[in-house]
Length: 119
Length: 110
Image (cartoon, rainbow over all chains, first blue to last red; front, top):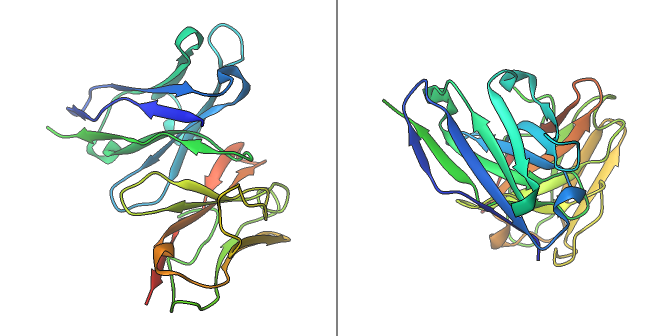
């Protein structure tokens, strides 16, 4: 079945950047957008943006306005892996970050990556 | 505060019928299909309903979805204890050019 496997937990200091990976398998990587969603402790789901793995050399992207200028979504097609990098971290960025295929007929989610921002 | 409005909580007893609503506008639910996700404690969300009212294989038929105008609903036709979870609606918004999630509804089985 479709699998999205994310990298492990991260602890970062305020002002640093974090890069989370999402390795996919059991489907055609370039056929589905990869979305990134985060969930702060005890809170709901928040959409961060999508990356189109099939769009040019760098891949097409659409970022939520809130994260514009701070988030970068990329991919390495050769290893079927998507990446999400978030910069200038603050304590408010402490959350579980998910990669996912969304709003389709067979959505699938990664297991989540906990990013903790603490001095 | 989410653009898609869900009640923060809902509850029912085993076997009872329960409904969760998701209210939006013409630019989102009014013009795009809705998916529903179930999130059990400590786990990633899982697709429960797609295209407003379709169930993926493996999802029991006691779960059903509907959409009317700018609102959508998720119904449980015979609540079970294992249904205790958080539920989120989601859709695309044509004006914001963004995916929207509802704020989530915590379902408690009494």
